[in-house]
Length: 152
Image 1 (cartoon, rainbow, N blue to C red):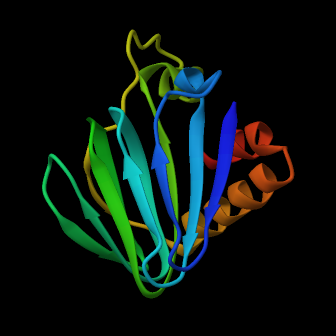
Image 2: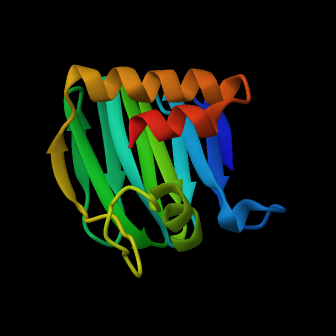
């Protein structure tokens, strides 16, 4: 299941596994505008992609600033935070081990005991950014699971 959240300018969200069904869910967050802030209390791994402007990410593996055309994959660590700078628009897809296992199963012909994300910096080409925007739109309309299959 994908749970979608939208953050407007100046708003904030604290993300945790506290809600029903959230431990097995992926969270799709779309942030936009100056100062929108996301704090992640749980050890969630994730993908972070700014579509416009700058996204500052901080946490256990260090601070960094992403710009449009870049993507950062973070490992499962608690107390991550992200802040949109200026007119930033960004998308994050986050989840715990169970959520990522479910999302990634079946991608390989070989059985993988524990699928995981490898933390690093990547380029985010236009195709990837368009797929993430489609995923965000589908999540807003309740059809994110089908759209996720087209992204990964």
